[in-house]
Length: 308
Image 1 (cartoon, rainbow, N blue to C red):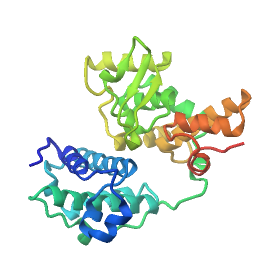
Image 2: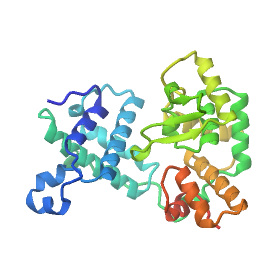
Image 3: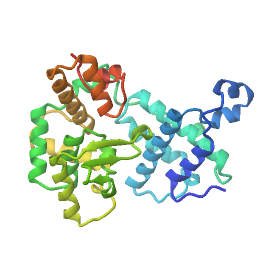
Image 4: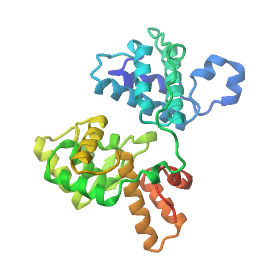
């Protein structure tokens, strides 16, 4: 019998139970449909499902829903989760979330006798409100002067959301990764910030710059903490802060934290090119820095920066 302390861990145990990289995916498809529907064949698929489980857990927590076990997640809640994502993501991303959730349901039904999840039959995949653009990252980069205005405001008006914006300016990581930074991740002796279990199950290390050290020190002292999260806040709260700050400062356009990440990536790429690196080498450097890995020029051009 599998026992876990929360929904994410319940799903994680079921996923681990169904993961076997050595199985031939095509052979199992012809031999046993049930095995094919519940088996996990690669680390990429495993981490994609774990990422989806983490997002679902955060959605339940952020909306203060009193749900402790996977068996109690109704199709209605899954519909709400996907509807929420439809206002922020492209159709391809929504479809991927839906497929991942359906696989999670099948895996949990197999591993937990108390589960009878019918998400696939009872949930309608919503239409995304965001249409994919071939240059969606480049065209929506926040101008550097506007980003500087937001950062100056955040320095003068302390709030946790503002501090996260300042930390992102130093790090360039995803907003959900910023929100999960813990005191235990900070290695001041070696001047390294360790970020475990980022998107795709990857680990990431970042240098603690003098600016980042000031931000971390201020937040740790402000809240008098010695362990746990440095920035205890949700992604939605950060985006709300960003919108309100843009309105106060008279900034035209509505930018997200991903737009800030794109601008920082462009800034890094331009610096490397001006230092003499080739377009390919600079793109590889930025892609690895963003934690996407090498040889991702197409992704960079579509979602982040302009290559030159």
